[in-house]
Length: 84
Image 1 (cartoon, rainbow, N blue to C red):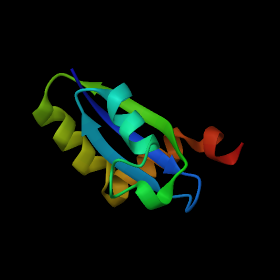
Image 2 (cartoon, helix red, strand yellow):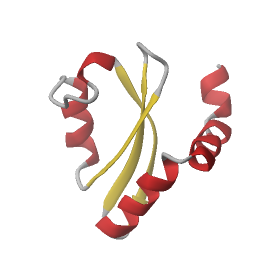
Image 3 (tube, rainbow, N blue to C red):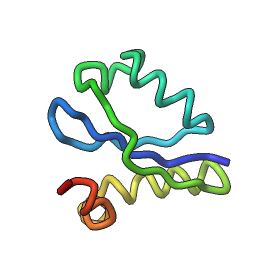
Image 4 (cartoon, rainbow, N blue to C red):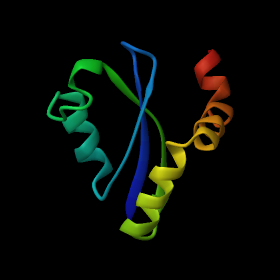
């Protein structure tokens, strides 16, 4: 299985979207500052993830979630989480 995931930066309140085969390990890398693209945006919270059958599906889903419609989907899906 591969996982498409979304992190929320507590610092800038923006999403970071990615995919991985090891969700727990990858989140730990982000958390510890080992990922250059999120190092300056910590602390980060894992707010959403989806399991995908293979790498290709996860990559396509990641690309979708980065589009305007994908971001609207996420904001709607996470509405109660984001508003408290």
